[in-house]
Length: 337
Image 1 (cartoon, helix red, strand yellow):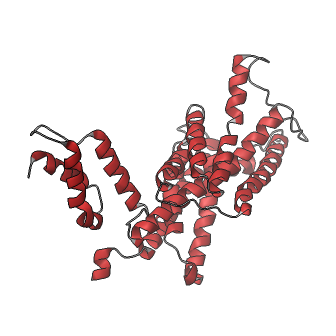
Image 2 (cartoon, helix red, strand yellow):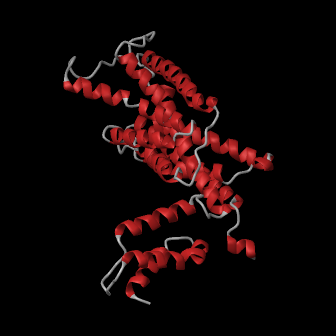
Image 3 (cartoon, rainbow, N blue to C red):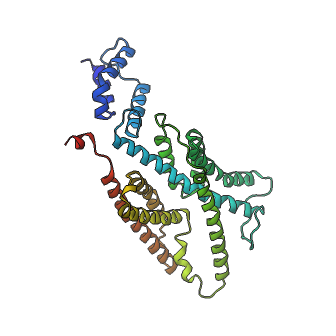
């Protein structure tokens, strides 16, 4: 065995063992034929290494030649992207409505107290308006994904992530869904068009959420004049940021799935609990990043609620991960035993 052949075989170890057992000799032969005469210093080219790595990822996420377990993981990653984009699409409706309210396009029953940033027709005003309207990218990405256009969803998600990473502290919530979108929807997965009502669901949820948050903001503005301020409002503040709302949504989804798992065995699926468990990770990190070292009573209450949220998410994530792992299809070795 030549040094180059040995190096090619090391690269092929990225592939699953079952796939490698069937195709390794064929692939090594093809690589050596393409390499031509080689000396001891010859090494696999970077495009070849990248192609093997991409093939390994596709196989492990439900590509051609994958096992039932790998197909289940592929569905998990794609569901992670779908749920993450659905939440962001709902939040984007809120952001867009707030932007329209600030610029006077959407009338509200009370003044928001916010003013457009920058002087009219200035570069600063244009930048802030562009950034605020970029929320629509996530709506486009989600609708495109639901309607079977993952290519459009990938392009708009990456663009939206770049814009948000420059200006939004909760951009961490978008990284995992975007990575799941880029890896889970590969060329070996046929495009799937969901029902139209699935595309409209987060948009309707976003509109309802905007009305709720608008009412809550009006109520807080009114209560601010009270000598008892902030009173019970301090217990609600930790739930109002995007990561707090995502935390609430995940906790409700976790409880709902556990009930379904226990009462309806026919509806059990490893992909749903595993996808929810994956999404708890960025939400936990985002919530913990909001902890404030200040020592006043209000901040201590906010920190206590935030820590309780993180603990609840950790417990939920562990429960979901255990349920998902136990319902995954058996590996080839386990099935043989």
